[in-house]
Image (cartoon, rainbow, N blue to C red; front, side):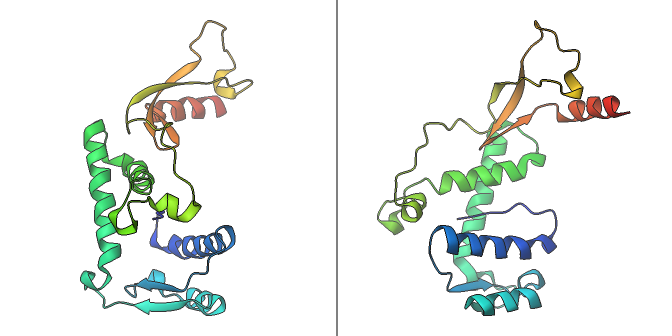
Length: 191
């Protein structure tokens, strides 16, 4: 399963093209068909041309009949449910929905599935078992060690100042807890 967090539906065309090309080149697999509900962002002329050039069959389901694309709809519902649970457990605001969704996809790809003989989706694609030793609980508080040499925000760095920041753990990213304060300090330095 792969997900993209988009600011606008218009960004979906580039994501689809990039993802298809990446799968075909990196995994040496051919995408045979793309199934969608006929929404405008999935049926642009340039996407239709791209599908035709790549030999990809385009399958359109009945609009507003989610049951005709049940597998995708269930996968989306699962990711949303897991993401909401992660946000609730971590007591984080909904503004972290993208990080929660991407972490949910990451976790789901590393869980065994009875449909594929109790292997993980990661195992099927990459032919090796995934490691989860490096993972932590989503949203847990942690500190990261930072040295910002000659960075405008830290020009007055003193050797006894803290060299770590409290952050919120999310997938492969650490989110500064008080990001707005850091941005505010940045704008003061630039002015």
